[in-house]
Image (spheres, rainbow, N blue to C red):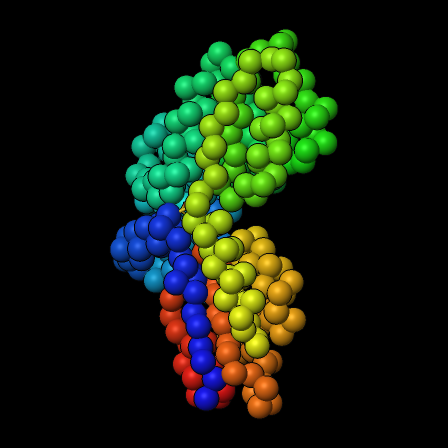
Length: 282
Ligand code: F3S
């Protein structure tokens, strides 16, 4: 029988767990409960919530058309305008934005009056859209060192640099070094969440010692995909699956150690199903 090592950090991080628990607590088929955008990036969880009557609002038009009910605001955060809209309409909402993301909202809300906000992150990610939506003056987003090199703040304003919580720390360090070398005044707040880095470090160290590695996560989840990339670099027999039914890995006598990890939006019951399967078959 093969040894199985499951990462301690596998699955929900603190912010996602809080958001999902709250969404299931509020779910009630008798009432009108909605989430604005998927509460987390995991189809299985969204489906379970929908089975419990929670409907997904996908656009601002849908939100605007709402007359009553309770809206759950996703863990990645939403722009301030969304909250203002709900308050204007008198619709109940429950904000499950991760406290680490909320901290960024508070920083940019305060600093954007005087300073130019620069966000190190992916401009298309909902978290970054949310952060931009808390800036009182338009924010700039940069994702690469080249963009940092070429960057000039408008009207020579002082700069406040923050990062998307899942931004790569090494890249952020390079960007902040570039910014510090520039002559303009800049304040830098490292808003990267340690959960991601810890997750990645543990995944790599397990994969290094494993004959086969299983990464469980939704194909749309960027942190799950990143875990897969890291594990494949050090363990060629790494598989990326959404649920146990996708697993192709077979015991051929050469697998003595199987590592398992899962993205931050993978629910525990899916991890357990994979563990049970590996325990039986390997
Ligand atoms: Fe929050 Fe960090 Fe998770 S920012 S949602 S605890 S990855």
